[in-house]
Length: 134
Image (cartoon, rainbow, N blue to C red):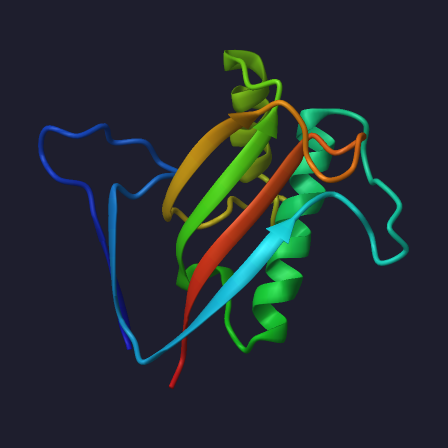
């Protein structure tokens, strides 16, 4: 199984983002929105950066439970409460160090600003599609 990352001429080139991802796979996993809650439904972190780190860690846990790795993420949707250039920047900062100080692999993602999420304290939620090994 291969995954191609394509950044066509004429489109924004940005390290954490691949404009197009093509997965040659027969199995996929659809990961539900992951927030910064731990297994006891306690919120981890009080700002966009800390919550983004935890949500990305939770995403990795869910992907690994399905038999995949974060390198196989095809697409994700990021929901940020109170989206501003500063809060989106904090999410991008978290992408740069989310995996034990290492950057999260580039993939296709959309960032959407929302008024609220399921928990009143939640500031970020991330869902993903992952190409699994055969």
